[in-house]
Length: 227
Image (tube, rainbow, N blue to C red; front, top):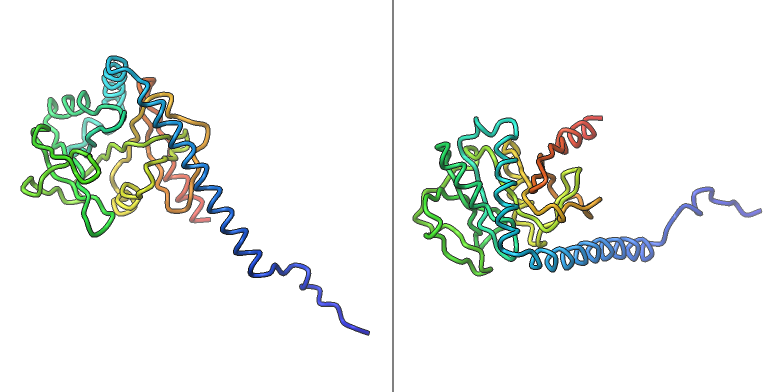
């Protein structure tokens, strides 16, 4: 009588397992790419006047987030391709005597460097067309940055964020765990659920022209990891 291996039926051929894994990765990539395409189109449909008003309203909401008054060094971004303008927020930051810094992409890795900037006209386009500080501007050590204003193509109420897919912000945020992360976007960029992978970093707050929402995302993640 032949013996039956009770575990044999639970085994999955390696080829089938790899195919399943590849399909999962491809499906996630497709979901992200589709959402990126949709949001790029919708952002470019926003008029300059509407975008200006939204940026002003969002800046007021950010100023009401707990801890804003105490934050001395805030990193912002220079908007491109329909991103919500940070100019009203920068004006508010400088009126309160805060240091404003902008990111700069390094050619050899995906960790953003930040430089203090007191005049946005001195920013120069990078190879991706994003205005950046020049090397002669003062470097701001990562442990001095208290808030990081983060752009994105889509966000959700959990703090999930969808960027352009180059991982510059995800890599940088993972290396700056103490800085408060504030996602800034138009109201229509908030979706029910952003497709996420393990390397995607979440926001502590999401701000649009409609208001500010604290996500408690990292608190919840840390609680799950401790269990």
